[in-house]
Length: 173
Image 1 (spheres, rainbow, N blue to C red):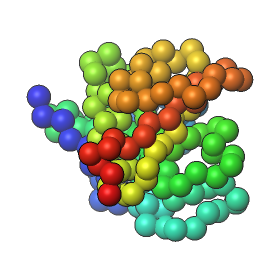
Image 2: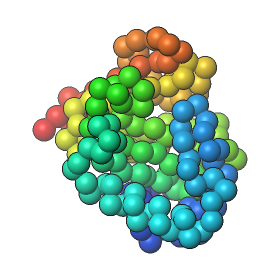
Image 3: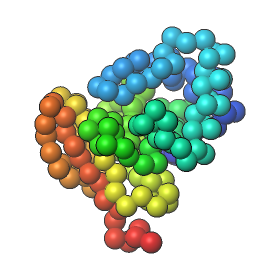
Image 4: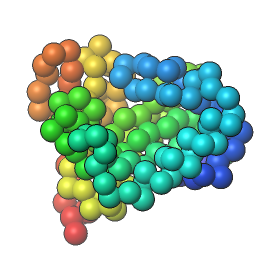
């Protein structure tokens, strides 16, 4: 099996659109604004998301630049993740640095771990020293995924696990 993590592109096509139609609109805090949307809205969203990945500005006091990534398994998109380029005080409490989701029909196969691992490589390449994953306490698979990728639970409060993952020493620049 060949796995690859690729950044979103404004030229992404029907395969990504189909995956986004299967991912719930809001599941354990991971939002998918394109569930049930028209293809034309998806095309416009791709352009906005690609622009966000190049931005350096914070909007509305908390919206930070972010890059969306897709996980492909043998050429089929099976998951998505968002990597925020920085954190605000609000995101330290609710949101974190990375959110990820696997397409429902592909869960339980280790794809979440592979997706997070790939996005962590991107975070380290971006120069981030550590990232925060906030996970609803009842979302055991995501907690296990974050811990399997080197995460350490810093706090459990208000129904959330706050898991920090630090850049490994061999990746320190």
